[in-house]
Length: 380
Image (tube, rainbow, N blue to C red):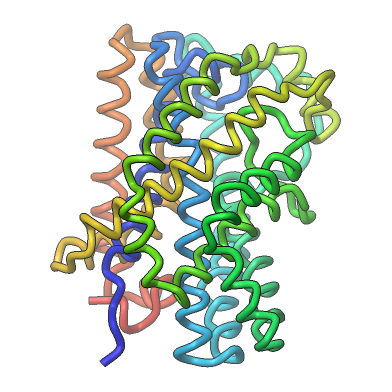
């Protein structure tokens, strides 16, 4: 009987749910006040650290898990069935939900301009920039994942090269030395903290980060026994992650000014005046260390399967797809209330999860939409 990797399912849903908390917390961290749609005047520096820390590993972990699942599907169903499945479960939802998301966000911004007091600084950018570049918003992960699935599909057609690459990317020397160097080099001209690759055209720097993690995940599927060996070094990897993060926080660049945001919006990207080598290096090491720590923690403590975990695994995809505009509808009117940032965060997350959960249960689970997102076997 083929094993089921329950911790992979649980980590995937947790990574997506953490994204909801991450995006909610951006509104209340002063570091992000000039770049986030719903930046609230009631903020606290603690949310800076939570957002910056979780940003280091949340999506790298997701892409590692996606690579693991890609290798699993290729082995169990074959390359042809794999690419057909990924186009239906990843590319098609992206094509359907992107125009809907852009339309809803346009509405919430227009509506928010009337109800939010005071308006977030980013609203002033909309007045300056008449034709902002199209962004894939938080759905960029689907577009990037489609590209990476096409890549690994092509690689899998060359079996010797496929096997060799996947055996290399899980070796200690690769994970501890080569991978941080690849990430450092790929993101050399990107701002710190690194942005989302949210353009419709390929952003090749993201392949160095997310593409590498995707291959590492595929490698761990085929060399799964190595995780037990790495688990013996968990404390060392955890200490490296903490040390790199402390350095990262210490050397972090100043937040973007309003003028820099406007210039970046006009150009479609941020032009760096100088490269912060220390921040880039510590960020690269922390990304790898925290991602491996999260994977090993899931492997050790989350390898259980019950009705709740199955339900959340299926619901998390829907929740993540709809959460950003939903958060905006909640957080914009909250600006008019003088409440502590922590209270606003709790309200934002709880209401988002409640509305998202109810909508999933009533309109997605056991419906055509649920089959569209998760497949027939995942409904119920």
